[in-house]
Image 1 (cartoon, rainbow, N blue to C red):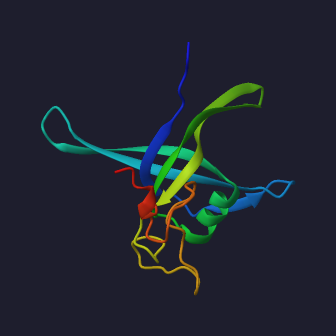
Image 2: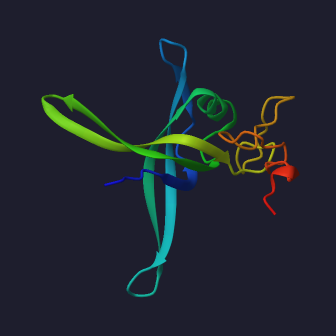
Length: 147
């Protein structure tokens, strides 16, 4: 039987990104994403439910996250689920996480989040990570439009 492992999440960072490097020099960044869902309960009142998701970014995407994102930054992540397992004090433990394959920053261009913080002088954050051929506007070049 075939399988499909794809996750798309949109939320806000729960903490500042912390970029580390593997011994081979590959950047890795662990971030937390808070995803909110607003729904009505049985009595008709609006209730906010928050899901916290751990996300791992690799390579240049991890470096961009560390450079331009801060706690509270809105972000769209596309990736796959992975189960981490380990043993601590003789007990087996496991945790489900998302390994990001694509990251889209959702804040206003030129700001890290809605607080108005700006990136370093002369540097504008990339519109999108993971898609080749994306112009500065964040949209594909016009000749790539299929209609």
